[in-house]
Image 1 (tube, one colour):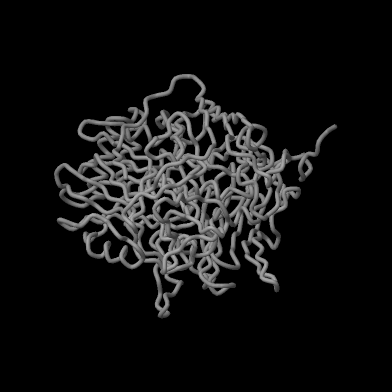
Image 2: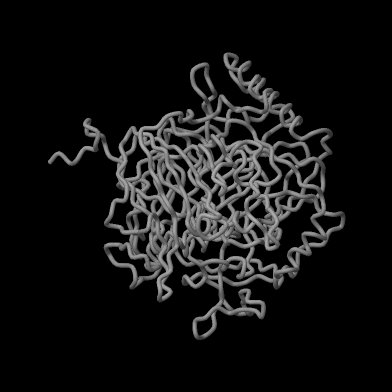
Length: 614
């Protein structure tokens, strides 16, 4: 367990390249196991190099960059040779090439080709390769992340901890003619430093094995590691529906299982940059104050975990305010008590604790349709926060508004100060900091349907539009400069849709009744049912209308149309051409075929796209 405190934002950049060497290798260390109250030894594929915390070796170093800079990231693959990793890569939808790798900068608006954000290559054992990420000068500031993305082994490597935060910092204040970076509003002022925490949530699903290769299990079917065992993530029998809750493992935060976050003070407005860098769980983040003299977490197997929360995390939910989704500043700071993070999601939140004491960081109870394991799951403890200082009186939204108005008065240029102040006063609007204009018209349409198909001999096929992934097939050719409206559905289970390069704006999300837009502000999504047939409220869609994202859950809480939602989004294809992918961000689904190849090409001036001229 680690103690992690907030820190001030980084200073303004120098004009230089950002250079990192990521060494991909097996690392032996240990992870805290709350079910047995001891450290488990593990040996996992990891990123090593400058910036890696030796006490948390299974989370990558935090990369920081400013618009206009270049990140040169060299991968050194020092994993052992792998007979399933052919020299030419491969695109089979049977998991393979566990020791081959590559790198994806999730959410960055950069070139997908060559040695930029190219996930269609394989860096095999013994090879080193330098990626070059040219961040354009007009790139939005925000919270992004990076992770391995080698088709066939993505889930196995990310579930080992091969992921890290990537923060694009902003120095551009708004002007009378252009929006700016919210970073410039959240600069320190007298009495309010606006410190930040960058939090990477992971599900490291290690298992120990019997001599015959099977996973060791306790009588309740959870994973078991005996003293002297070394856990690992070595095969895809560790993935699949329900495997994460069955494993009995706990989501880690910055590499710590049930860690304690330090340095918080009541009344201090903290910016929490939260990255879901895991594979197999949905997180519904909530804060509750711990009871006086509450016990320390111990022996938290299955039902005991819920009993601990019910007994010790007894305070009312603490409201907080979301200000950015998937790295992109929202139209207004949105008050919530629960923010749902699916794999690949990021939320930036402004968090104010109302009084000193200890607080529980919780993964709140979730609905079957609202989480990717399709199960009704009780509340789980993720960690705790130690809060000092003095209590804040009054409503937290009013308190936050006062602090942001003071920041605007101190930090905004005179020619926009009145405008920004008026926006904040009018419902905590952040209009001057939105990075992309709304999409009010489109030039084309796209449809996409996720499906899992089971054959008569129990073969399972993970498909998009009725086809598994084929590395030699281009599934969609899209025109540079075009604007498409996409309609997304799932025929079976819920799947997080993620597309590389260009983000999208949520237009509407229609419930299974075919009429209710559950993305509207104030909407109630209660179309799922619990085991007794009662409506279950899911908080993750209401308020998403108009929000920009790059990853979004496409829900279906039942097989077929009865539980099917219709997600409508719009996106622009700007600046970059080349081949890249879209896929389900349940990464073992992607590895097994739930992915498509996309090509953006230059228009030919006659309604099509230009072919090669030679």
